Length: 265
Length: 227
Image 1 (cartoon, rainbow over the protein chains, first blue to last red):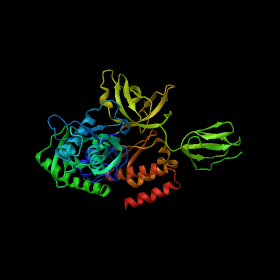
Image 2: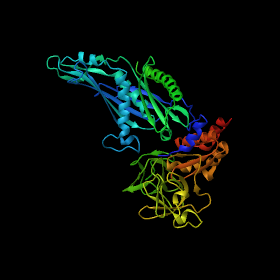
Image 3: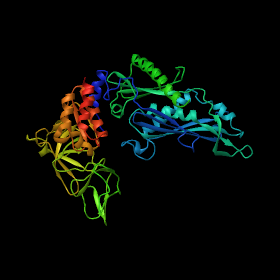
Image 4: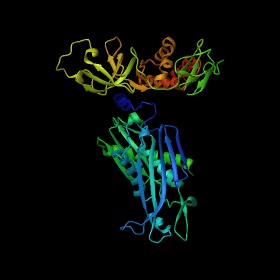
């Protein structure tokens, strides 16, 4: 891994970036593909610049949790594959993988993006409910995994269709999908703003990501409602910085949403 | 009794390059029976009766005399361990680091610290592929400022060009100091716009390295961007 940390920080002070982009510019190409796996109920492969993430949605029927007997559930798992970066090793998920899964999970959960009560109603077996399992795997980590993973998760959720269920036996036939989509109420997208030498920037590449002072991930809906935040990095953020970050994150959120709408109508 | 491939053909491992005994297997090829096969992905070159392949990709294999760029990863008792982005360990000994006398109790991290980059020369490669480095030549030094980029080490000759024509062109047009390490690490230092243009130019050469007349193309590219 090559670090040009000092150069990146010097450039940030002059409002410049090492790859010549503007501070609030995402990398190109932005590619969003859905339906990449026929075994999953919904799937997506998202590329921003050199960063590539795949997400899959599986639907299963299970007993609801005891405290929410009339609701289904969501589970998000993230795996940082060793092939995606020289820094990742195989084995149990580390702090970075857990944070990635939690940030994506919180965005979807706290926005009440999926109608959990409907997951119960749509399930015809009385004692069970549908559970949505989102799996995120990184194919290449060239920076900004949060935004790419969040976009992939939402694209996969949008493309997911319920499998057919045998009405007599209650058995699920995963090989044949119905045309029923998931009950999505909101569509939160995370945007991470990085603070580097007092400059605010989005979509860092791998070198920039190793040089940041602080970051704030903001998940927002189509109407600009903020559903989740996650702060990272060692440096504190001032109130003025946070409001500037929120403005930038909302603007970039609607930019990513447009890209998503173009790819997954 | 003849060659099957032409000059500059792209071949993949296992491709038959020639049949019969008229040709000799050169670099990155081998003979089995009557046929000569390719060992790597690359471009064929046919100087006379020897078939050679110029590889398009592959790892860097250290050679004595190579000028390389590496990152210091550890400070040992009598020197620095250096990462050259190869599979092999490299070591810079105190006695090869500077010409001045270094006292026994001196703090080596004051001279070169961990995570700093150096331009060094390979002075020895043991049979175990352990590499010894030296800084005691003109131009060899600790790197400060600028940026470091990585390219495929097999493309280094193209970035430098014939008698350094390509690298001189980039230096002239961008106003950057450029040092190309044989291991594929390149150090650029200049104005921020110049560094960026030089980086893009070098990445472009890496991508288009198999094309003819690359120096002229790069000249036009750089002139188009410096207007």
